[in-house]
Image (cartoon, rainbow, N blue to C red):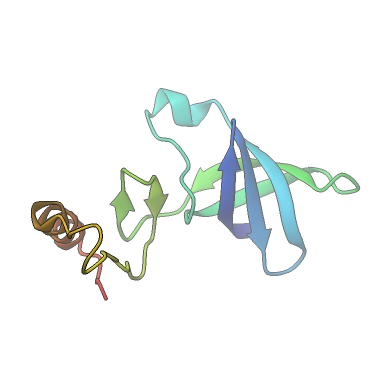
Length: 110
């Protein structure tokens, strides 16, 4: 069954599937061996372990279109960068860093 990771907390990933809703899943150990960590926004394949408790395991991560490190997210469609115009004064070098990071990862900004 395929779904999208909506939230990740302390090794538990909440995967939303079109067919059945949200499942609490754990990642298989193979991801540690591959040095790959599931991220919020990842499209994944899961296997249901306990249907009644809505639990499962993530067995594969589908290819990502892009990835952000901070915050950790994948398959980002658009980013919105907000800064105050006054009080506090905007930090323009920081704004430049954000925009360059988004451009490098090919994430459109609004």
